[in-house]
Length: 290
Figure 1 (cartoon, one colour):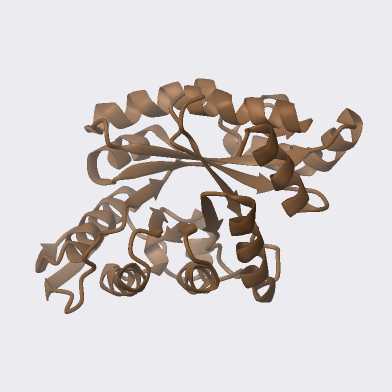
Figure 2: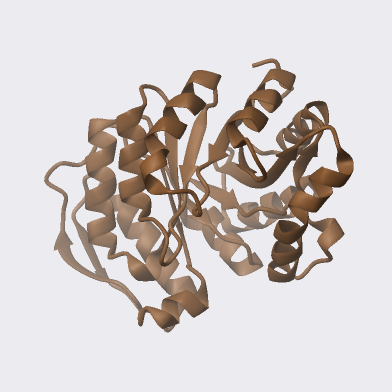
C-alpha cells in the first residue's frame, strides 16, 4: 500500500475537556495525525490544537479549518508560529473560506472570498518564513508586518476548499489541499487536475477527511451513517449514496483507506461516527497492519 498517513478527527460535538485523553489514546494506538475543527460556535481551532499538542509527544496535529474571514492573517501567523516553535514539525494549518452563512452571522463575510483566501494564505506563509509583509490587497492590508519569533521549521499551510476555482487557488498558493468528507477516489482525480491547473507541484499534498463507521452489521453501520451522508450529500449537491465513506467491517474500511491512498491521498483523516470511536479507530489501524 502507498505509505499513507492515517489520522483521526476530534469531532466538533465532543467536549473540549475530553480532548487531552482522546489525543493521548489515539497516539498510543499509533495514529499519525489528529485533526481539530474550527466551526463557528464550537471550539477554537488554534486553542484545540495547542491542547492536543501539549497532551502528546509525537502526534501531528492539524487545524481543519481556520475560516479566513474570522482570522486576521497577522494574528493567525503569530498563533501558528508560537505552536510551531514549541512543537516543531507537528503542526499543519488548514485555512478556508468558512461557511458563508456563518461568516455573515459573525459580520465578517468578505466581498471577495477568493481574494481573501489567496491574500490570507500568501501573507501567512510569508510571515511564517520570517518575511516582512507589505500587502495592499483587495481584502487584506499589511503594512510592514514581520514576526519577531518565526518558526525554524515552517508548518505547512493547506487550503480546505471544495469548488473548482478554489481548488485552482489552492494549487497556486497553498502547500496542500484539505479535501472535505464525502469525496472518494474518483473525486481526488479531479482535485489533482484542478490543483495542478493552479500550479501545484509534486510536493502539494492531499489530506482527505472521510466519515468512518466500522462494524460487522451492515444495517447498523448504514443506520448510523445515514444522517451524516444525507446532510453531506445535500451540501455537496450529490445523491446520498454517492457520498464516500470509509466504512463497513474493519477490513472493508482499511480497503477504503487504501483506495484513497492509491488515488493520491497523502493523509486520510477518519471522522469516526457511532459508539466507541477509539475502538473503531483501533480496528481500522489493525486491519491496515499498524
